Image (cartoon, rainbow, N blue to C red; front, side, top):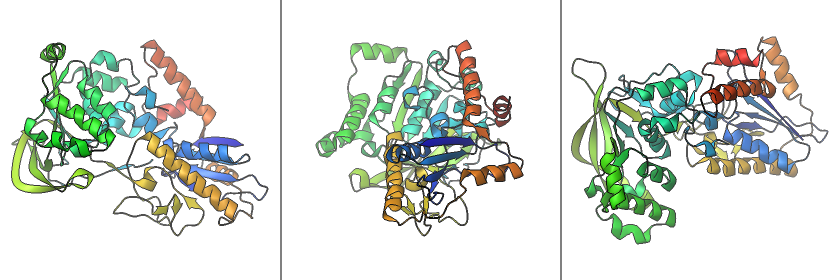
Length: 445
């Protein structure tokens, strides 16, 4: 049983991440060989299940960056180290005028900026405004809000990048509005992330009481997780705080709040200046109830002044290759339990399989399902493993012919060691290397 991680030297032919698992690379000797493209959570969880379930399996994991772990390294908030154990490389477009103005960022790029993703280090967001608007109310939206408003001393103890830390130290953002098109009972975040916002030092919540009309009466019919989440929102928005909490809020210098029943229709520019001045929001009403409730326009609009807009309406997978099926509407590879349609021997895991839904535990279970599908196909004979395949030897030869020197896992350990030692100097878990060139220089010494 073995697993080899081969990290791609970027700049040549790009290895597309999507956790596509190719089951064709099996040897007739009884030692199955599997190629996994993408070293994020789904890739590693798929490999883990294969290695545990089959004694002789050999797994090769390929990654286009010189560092592994995907969204665990570049997507998880730096103050959530307990979660750090491809999905989707693109952004869902807001689709409104002005979304290309300076001062408008996708959450994916903003998160990549403070987490050290090399492709996002030129972002340099302007944090000189007082009000920021986040479009979307999922966990990523709350992560971004929390990072914008967190006390600097708390962030200094995380692996947030030094340039981001310095920018946040100069930030004037003191009010963050988290906007959603539906209501409190449809909010997409989880209770843990909401509780962190409620208890965030130096901040106080600012809600609109009318947004919660009728919510208390509907609590009894909600599933337990949704009920607990909604109860916390109700308590935060409407209940009189304790004397201690009142005192804490009185001292707070920063504000955050949900804005429900609102959809962006335009990003407004400053007169005579090509940058964000506000967001025009359509006022919605709900038709239906529960998770299936739909936001319907009322015809009313309102303008919210702000200098920073972050779109957190979801990640979006991109097509891998013209030969691989892709559903452009749903932005996934069409599959059944991970088996790619009309492509025998090809499997997928992660957000390329399901779309950008759930948390890392969701990805883990989905990846295990994909691994089980592959193994079932081997056992049943549906997957032809009778002919020998060269596997990683062919890839190594191809890279050598193209002059690409790959980064191996032991090379990554050099990067890891340096980052960790750099972090120790300033009391952080690590200080990340921020460019591919610098990563390669360390790996190849």
